[in-house]
Each structure stands twice: as C-alpha cells, then as structure tokens.
Image (tube, rainbow, N blue to C red; front, side):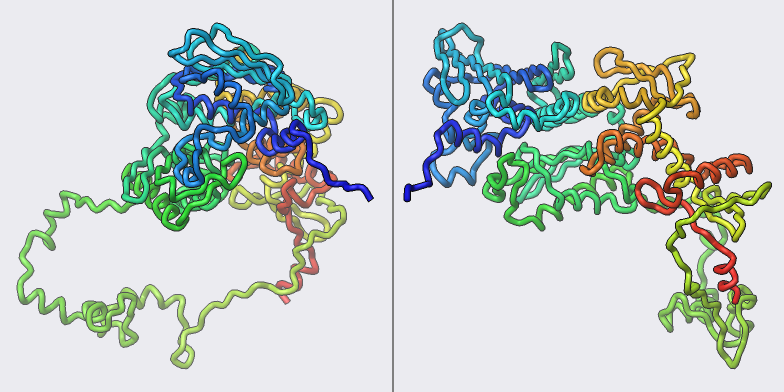
Length: 617
C-alpha cells in the first residue's frame, strides 16, 4: 500500500498556523500596533476601512528596517528579540515570537514601506499568500507603514465567519484602547472610513484614561501607587459610584502588556467588598511591574494570559494596594473620633475624679460586671434594685414571662408544605377589588381563590419584554417626538455599539440619529416612556446591553429587548395608584409566560385558600 502521510506545503501550513494568531481584523490590529511600539515609535496612526475587512494600515515613526530585515520579517519565527532559550524569560517587548507578520501575510495582501534614519531610500515590499510579489526601493518617511488588505481573501470560509462591520469595529476599538492605554507617552490616532475616531495626544496616564473612557471619569479616579522590593503597582481605580453593570472598564497590565486574570480581578473585588453592589464591577486601570523572570507570557497565542511564579503574593499586593488607595482618599467608611468642644465643659470632664468618687464607682454592680466577670453583655439576675440595673430589667420585662425560673422565647418556624412551584393555570382577578402596595415593592392582588403577591418591578419587566419582542416582529412601537431634542456624546466604543443598535432601537420607539463624531441626537422616545431623562436612559441601556452581551446564547435583538425591559421597568420605591396596580396585574396575567422574568426570577407568588388554611391550622 502507498504511504499516506505527506508534508503540507508551506502556504497551507502558514494559513493553518495563522488561525491561532489572526482570528479577525482586531487580531491584526493588535499585532501591528505592538510591533510599532517595539520599534520605538512616538506617533502611531491606525487607519481602518470596512471594519478592517478591506484595509488595516498602521503608520509609525519608529526606527524602521533595512532592506534585508524588511524581507526577512515576513518569514515565520523570524525575530530580533530572541537569540537563545533563556531570552524567553527576560522578555520586555510586546511581540517576540516572529509570528505576527508571517500570519498576516498568509491570509491577506500586505504592502510595507519602511526606512531607517540613516538610509537615503526606503524599501517597498508587496506580499500575497505568503509569496513576495514585488520588492523595490522607494521614497518613504522614517519609520514603517504596513497595509493589510482584503483579509481572508484566500480563505473565504473564514471570511464568512466575520461579524457585521459594527461588531468587528468594536473589537478593533477594544484592542486599540488596550495598546493606547499601555503607552500614554505615545501619540495614537484611529481613523475609520475617513472619519477620525480617536486622537490621543501624549500625556499622563490619567489624561489617557479620560481621553479614552470619557470625561465623566475625570473626578471619579483614585490613584494607586505602591512600591515594594518584589513588584510595583500603579494606576487608578474608580470610586464606588463609578461602578457599572459590566466589566468593560477594567484593565490589567503586567510589564505594560494587557492581560486577563480572573484571579487578580477577584483581589480587587475583595478590596471593594461592601462598597459596591454585588452585581456591579469597579473601574480600574492598573499596571504591575515585576521581574520578567517571575512570569511566563508565552502560554497563549494572544499573550493575554500569563503565569505568575507566585500568584498568591501578587494577589495580596494588589488587594492591599487598592484597599490602601481607597482608604487614603477617604472612600472607605471610617469612624470619626473628633471630640465636640462642648463636651470639654461638662462636669464629668472638668471636675477632678476624687478618691471617694473612684471608690463609689468601683463598688457599683455595673463596674463589677465589666471588670470582675469580664463580660460586657452580662446582666445580673438578682433583684433589680440591688443590682443597680433596674432600667435594664424594665426594658426586658414586657418580653419575658416567668415559668419555673426560665424565660419563654418566641420561636419562628418555616411553614411546611408550601409549594413554591407556580401552578400553570389562569388567574382571575376579583372585580372592583382594592389592591394593596407593600413597602413600595410588592402588590397584593385579590383573586377568586386567594391572592397574588406580585413583585412590581419584575412583573413590569415581563410585560415590557413581551411587548418589545412583539414589536420587533410586528408593528413598531409608536414614537413620541421630543420638542427639544437631546444631544449626547459617548466614548468611541459605546458610539460604535449604539450605531449597531440604531435600526432595532427605531423599531422599539427610540429615534436616535448620528450627529458627528461619537455624538447623537435623541429625536424621540417610546410613547409610554416619560421624557426628560433620555440621555441617561440611553447610557444605562448601553450598560445593560453590554451586561447581557456576556452571555453568548443570546442574539443581538434578544439582548436588546432584555436590556430595554430591565431599564424601563418601574423601580422598587415607586408609589402606584389602585388603577396602576390593576393595570399592571391585568397586563401580567395575559402574558404568554406571566410567572417569571426573562432572566427566570419569579414575578409573583400565589397564596390560595387551601394554603392559607394550612398556615392557621
């Protein structure tokens, strides 16, 4: 029989290997930007067309390359960073494995112009499908310009897996932000389809954070600065009121390299314990600098996951640094021990404590309880008059009953036999019944066989969810135009997300129009939504949408209607009239699935007559 194993041709092997490094246009953006940083550039420009599908171009003013280096850099595993295996454990640069340009050249058409400061002319190279099509001298500025055109032109199956332009652009912006945040001393710009999205001047880290994430964070950042013999930690964390429902504004950098680490994120969440809600996430941009020998960055193709030699030490340092920063800037709760000046004038402070008064105080039963028996909570069981604790006894007497020298206690037991499963049947509200609102959160709705205890916010969320779901497949929600349209500015990442959602938002009653770079005009809102807070509502909607985006099983439209339902539902603490409670109950009970919210929380509990009788049996 003939042999069946054969070596793959180089161009096919390169395409397969490129799948690990270049998964989408954003992957190429990351690699090209990191190469520009490694080249010592102080100005880096990123130009994108069609969300990177037709063009990704990076222009830098770095040191450039010679003609030989320009040709050799496209070979797989060709690198200037490693000479021997020990160098892997002293990596200080962003790229080092020599895979980025080779992978890009395997799945795209690449053009490069480069020139060193000492060279009179530069080098132009054109590569397609890993093959050099043209190489010649050219006029070029000092530095390097690389253009990646028609990504996956030779792998159409992978091109079909790319998402919409808006979705791919959001990934590109994410990668751009991570690199730009790492190097605030470098100028960065991002242009998409001829429109400038980012223009980030050189400056401090705080200035870069505000430029990228938005000016609303300018007054909400707390500096973190800790230096130790093992590592240094610096950066900023957000005040508790800057916490959001999504992890979007969280950045960890180790030796200026962006990383993902659930372990270190847990350290920060512990530092914020009891300061923010359990389902909220704090803002942080933290840089950890330590000896490269203490980490291994070569454990993942994207280099976003690294290994620490001693994770526990890093965890402890991060948690302590964040706690210290929050305490130092009076963010964490503290007790105030300043003495009121009027207290100094009281007799107990101004008059001397004589020996007679000292003897009288030490002979009291209260003094003995605290000193001799060492129990601050001890209460003498003797006669009240003799013990000096008459007031304490009076306080407890109404709740006590003497039975053979013992005190009866009220025991509360969980009633048994209660069925928490909501029966699958229709519930009939009583006609002309009076509804009762409890704690501005729950509604008691009488039905023919007892009553329903309705959670007003969850119930309204279910009603709105089904209404919006119907609107997306049928007649659009009516829009109420604003007399005074509201203009809003968003960070570039949120602006890209909102652009993607505009068509579906229009179907749901929101009329929002682009208004220049990262700006929008809210022309109208759904007719049943109160006007006056449109801008905040849209910002919260985007935050909620990103929160739901973490679940991959939801479609874009499903995430949107869930976000809108959660955003527009009446909140706990809202007073409702009898008519409003009746309307909410009626709307809930005609829903296709009235007993749970879209996220599975119960909207009501039924108390029928049989169960009520068992409670009092």
